Each structure stands twice: as C-alpha cells, then as structure tokens.
Image (cartoon, rainbow, N blue to C red; front, top):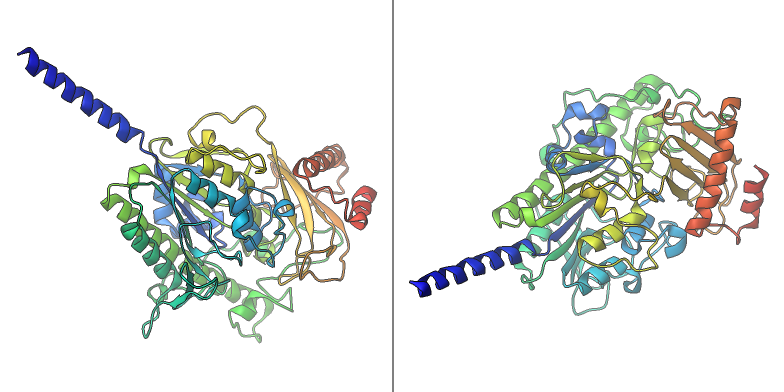
Length: 510
C-alpha cells in the first residue's frame, strides 16, 4: 500500500515538474511588419477610417493583447527605420540616414543576439537593407523594393549574395502579400530546429506605393465614399508662417508630383473634382492592400492555433513608419507630422499581456530591439541606445526615468516628395520642429537649401496640427523650454552636429 502511495506521489511530482517546465517554455516571437501602414488605417486606433472596418484581424489581436498609442519613428523612411530596428540605434549612429544606407551582417545585432540565445531565426519578405541578411539562420527576401506580383526573392544558398534567386508564380499572378505568407508558413512547417523557439521576422511589402492589391480585392470599397480629413481642404495655419507649401499633394497644389498623377486622374477636371477623385482612388487602392495584409495575418494566426503554438507565441504587429493619407493635402511619409511620425504597435501574448490593454507612454523605434531582446531573455548591449518597454507591455508602470519626449530627424532634403530636412522633439503636449533645409552630406539630397523655419504645435488643443503657434507670444515660454529640451535630447542621442558648422550657426541664430 505504501509502495502504491509512493508511486502516486512520484507521478504527481513528475506531472507538476512537467507542467512547470511547460510553463517555463520560452516563447516564440513572430514580428510582423508592413511597409507604410499608418496607425490611423487600423480600426483599433479609432480614426476616421475605422467605420470601414479595414483590419478585422489586427483589431482582434489588439482586443486580445495591447495597443500602444504613442509609438513614434525616429526617421520616417524605409531603410533608416529598418536599420534602427536591427541595431537599436539612431540613424546618425548606425550610419543609415537615407535610402542609400545599408546594414551588413556585422551590424545585424538583433538577429545575432537572439540567435545566440538559442532561437532559430528567419527573415522573410521585405528586407531593404541592401547587404545579405546573413545573421539569420534562414532568409528569403525581396531584392530592394521588390515587385507586387510574381516577386523575385533572394535566398540563402551556395552562391555569394545576391546570386541565389527564385521567382514565384507563373501564368497566374501571385500577390507578394500572399507569397510572403506562403513562405513563412512553409518555413514554420519545415523548420530544421523545432526543439528551439523561433524568431520570425515576417515583413510585407504592402501597402507601399503604387498600392497594387491582389485581384480578389478589386471591388472592395467600390461603392463606398472614403471619409476625407478636414485638413485636405482647410489647411488653417499649418506649416511655415510664410506659406511656402512643401510636400507632394493629393490634388494640384504640387504640380510636379501629386496623387492625381499616380492615379491617372483626368487633368481637365476642376481643382476640387481632381482632388476628390485622386483621394478616393488613392485610399481605396491603399486600403485594399491593407486588407490583403490583414487577411494574411489571419492565415498565420490560424496556423499557430492549429499547431497549438498560438498562446506560446508573442505576436507583434507594426509598420516601418506612418503615412500621410491626405492630411494637410500630403501623401507619403518623411514628415514629423503625427500621421507620418506615429507607428502602429500591437502585441498579443496572453501569458504576459492583459487583453484589451492600452498604453500611452512615449516609445520610439530605437526601443524595439531592446524589447525584443528582453522577450528572448537577452540583456541589452551597451551600444544600443533604446530601452526595453516589456514591463509596460506587461501592465507595469513605466520607470520614473522613462523618457517624456522623443527625438526625430529626417535627412533626405527635398528628395522624391519635396520634404525639407528637419529635426525636432515631441513631448506629450507639444511638438517643436526645426526645418533647417540643408542637404549636408545626405546622399541623394537636393543641393539647393530651403528657407529655414520653426513650427510649434500645442497637441492638447490642436491634435491635428492645424495651428503653427511659433509666433504666438503666449507660447514664448513654452518655446524656450522646448528648445532647451531639444538641445539636451540631441546631446543625449549624440546628434550634436559639430561636423556641420553651417547648421549649428542656423540653430544658434534662431
């Protein structure tokens, strides 16, 4: 009898230990990133577009996890943003300030460190960092921007990068969002080290311009009028006080390049008709690409559910930056204005994160790598400039010394979309931007300077940035305080511009 009781005790202890070991199982990490998917084009962010139900899958992930409201880019352009993700460093530190930059294997710190922690790593989809993603165990990536249909991929293989290529599709067109998801699912099913947790970076090309959606979405929103932002028509006192209008436009404001050109709008229409038609075509094509992303995320979620890995996988969704969808009559990104600066960020992992959580702490993409490393149980190296916000995801209060402001800098002076070079600071209540308008040494930047100017927005009263109050006497104390904070933040990040005396002179003179 005693022997029987002893056996039962042993079995119970074994079961308890097995359960404990299962609970201690390290989480998989699925990092999903799209290209140019603005937060205000996700239903869960409750913008004017939420009534269209553009992202049911992402909305469900947000309801089962956490939605971060104040995540910001430090340089709103594709290649620099991706370099920051891989290095945990600002553009001026990792050396990738423009689209011409590159990150070699020696700088692919995020992948190397997570791999060293015992994860099997993969990078699938849009890479856009020019050098081979050799720090990953497996990769299949688009060359450069890649094609929307029947895309070519570069793969790890016996030949030197970038000679290993394969083409997807054939007679029937295959959309990149579908193909990238097919590739991720294939890797998940066939990965070679299943005893290890996985770290998969699944990067969509969509919804980057020229917004080519899969054919099955051709009629989505066909009979819908997409809500317009008020600032498409009424710019108020937005922008420089001397009324120079920069940036490519929806309508005819920018004659060199506007969305009407991209959407083949009849140039004989009136200015109002031209703008309205260009906006509707633009948003419908963009949102059709967004739906393709959302539906393919659902495929990934279903696979994890079927294999029993859903609740042991940290699912993260973000984009490489925000995007202007007609606000202030702007298209594209690059700006420090809210719609371009803000990044979506949603995380689902029920073991750590309470369902339907929200957070408003200021976070930027320099913090992404340290957070991913802590998720994998890796200590952040000293050279990374960001901080992990994993405690915030878990519902804890941010540390007392958590940053109350974020720094931004755009270097590509007047390239592609006519945006002057600028830097600035965003706090909870205010935004101060200095458009210094100099090309400096940024590769590809237009060499002609533009008139420098400052912009100041009171985000409490003016969340849509309609009133530049830089000259308002009531804000002079705020202005001086913000200039001091900006100078301090530039010093903290190491972006003090000693090598640009002409820029220092401009900043000091103002």
